[in-house]
Structures are given as C-alpha cells and as structure tokens.
Image (cartoon, rainbow, N blue to C red):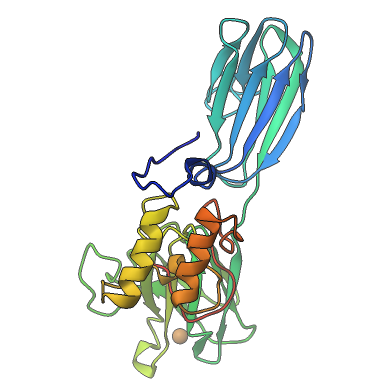
Length: 302
Ligand SMILES: [Cu+2]
C-alpha cells in the first residue's frame, strides 16, 4: 500500500517523499485464460497486486481442494473477483518463510504461488565445560538459539530467568524454557519472537557462575529514527535533535545510523536528507522494509 505523508514545507518535493515509504510492489496480470507471472518471490511487507487485463476471474488463495483449516484451504486468506468492475486486488505478505498458493476459481487449472523469503537465522551456543559459549549472544526477533551439549559433558540445564526472579516476568525461573542439556538431550532450540534481554542459567551450576544472556533486538527500518514505520523529514529532525539538542537517545540507535558506520553522527543526518531531497543514496539495509542489521557494531536496537 502506498502511504504518503504531506509535509507543509515548500522546498520538499512530494514525489521523492512518497517514493521512500513503500515496500516493493509486484503485479500479476490476469489475461483471458492465464495470469502472469505464476510465481513471485518477495520479502515480508511487500505487496502483490493482481490486475485485470481481460476475462472474468475469481482470485482465490490456497490450492483447489486444499485442506480445510490451513492456508491451502481455498479462500482462507483472500478471495476477490478480478474483472472489469473489480480491476485490481492487493495483498500484503506478512509471514516470513511461507509459500502461499492462489488460483482462479473460474479456471482452477490456473494456479500460482507466492514465496515470502525468511531472513531469520539460527545461532549456536555451546554447553561446554560448565559454561555457555558465548555467554552473551545478540540476535534479532524471529531468530532462534540452539544450545548444543558437548559430548561427555555433565548434565546441565538451560533455564530462562534468574534465581528469585519476579513471578510472571521473563525473570521467573523457567517461565520461557527449562530444558535439560545432556548426552540424551543434546540440542535445545528456542525461537525468540519479541525483543528482550533474557538472562538464563544452569540449575545445578548457577552457583558456579554458569549463566548466560540472550539479547533479542528489535527488527527495524534504517532511517526510521522516530519509529513510526515511515522514513521522512521527521526522522532527520529526530537525528539532529539527538545530536545537537540533547534529545533522549532512541531505544534503537541503529535507525539513526544511516550509513551503517557503527555510530550516529552528522554524516547520518546529511545522508538521510540527501536521500530524501536530492536523490542521494538510500539508507543501508534494512531498508525500506523492516529487518535485522547483521553487521557487527556496538549499536543495539531495542
Ligand atoms: Cu550446568
């Protein structure tokens, strides 16, 4: 979907402001007896628009005869006529790593698919020699951590929280997970879907200092310094206010690090203004869609 923020400043060219706010759009054209392309691969937040060229169609998600209660069930996600009265239908994909089918209910031999790329990762932590290695791991929401037990190592646990942590919070021992790490249960994997700083420990050995921490960072759009999900002049002002007026630091300094140089400085504000108003280079990834920043620097996004 195209979002456009009108900014009441004469020098701004609206065309350039509108252009930066949207993820990618893909178009599939319906012809008389076929649609093209039949398969599309895209990223989360991208949209697909089916567009009428000829014929009368009923665009239907799923596959013909797909199992009820799944995304393959015909019409489970969307169903829309595509004809002269209803020339377009647009859908935004928001589930990473999924493949969705779609077809024309008026011509069920015509099937297609949408594949949404997954940019999450799995990180390993060794349960080795009475320690978690590395002790602290920084990941992004959606990523997973796999605790791998060293063969012949004694029995440990991977227990979320801290001893005496407040009940009902992530600090409560075992609230999120409490798994044995041993030769009989050598791998434990957990996917983190929300930003948090999660301490964890080994029940038998916490008193010997066997603790660890998972820092789950927030996915973000670079340039979105005020975290309103769009990139515009307000973000440049936010960066300048942070640098020169002592405004509160953002909980996600990465959003302000436009060139991904590992620090926030005046060059970032200039770079963002250049992109917005004089066809300068785009902010570094993740942009224009939300995502993780895999480059290693000291900035943390919460
Ligand atoms: Cu242990």
